[in-house]
Image (cartoon, rainbow, N blue to C red):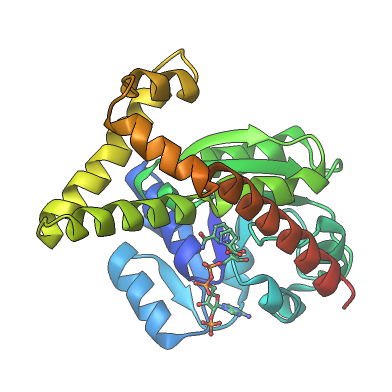
Length: 270
Ligand SMILES: NC(=O)C1=CN([C@@H]2O[C@H](COP(=O)(O)OP(=O)(O)OC[C@H]3O[C@@H](n4cnc5c(N)ncnc54)[C@H](OP(=O)(O)O)[C@@H]3O)[C@@H](O)[C@H]2O)C=CC1
Ligand SMILES: O=C(O)[C@@H]1CCC=N1
């Protein structure tokens, strides 16, 4: 299977790195990227073919992944209009709706909307996938093969729910990194050197996530197991509750979902 990327930034790099780790061949992957520096980095790091503008070789692929920022998409698709025939076009852009992408492509419906996340780089991503009803089983299978190589996948029933996927798992790693930053800062403020504070914070999140992933019990039950009556965790959780930690996270995810819908509506007017 040949895969081409339009845009070679953060997310394309995470996907390509994860795919190569899982046995995809560099010779089957191509990237069109505007930045010369970006092209050099991709070629050196991954050994993939990079070009500065769309060419026929780039379009000779089974799956074309659209990995430019939502605001860049319409302009980036202009050179592709009327040149696609068999490729499954997979957009990973936040917010953008398939109908608008299809229109910008001059009327093309073999489209799948996917929301991956950056842990794809180490094969630990999770992606939500939504296919235009006109995409056949082979097109869905090809898309799933790419994303399953870099993590778990879930087909989403309604395109409108893709903004919620974006808010929960697409942006989600940033929330977790922010939590790690806070735990690390707390450790440092309690006197640990930087390296020790970081190790304690990261290994705690890693261990807790692994425990939750491997357990039949809900995270809330696992939380209760840490929380001894009258102990230290209880004091911390009471402090979190008093400052609205849980509601803050829920509100943040909702803000991301709203922003995704806004992006789709605003950019789709073009
Ligand atoms: N980062 C993440 O965690 C996730 C991102 N996404 C989605 O992935 C997409 C890419 O995000 P991300 O990788 O973070 O963004 P980046 O800005 O890192 O990558 C986009 C790259 O595409 C380049 N580019 C812009 N226009 C064109 C063009 N016409 N042809 C070729 N290359 C072009 C950009 O160049 P320049 O720098 O000059 O603009 C940039 O290098 C977005 O739509 C985002 O919503 C989805 C899931 C997670
Ligand atoms: O922040 C963003 O808009 C993109 C989409 C999900 C993660 N990053």
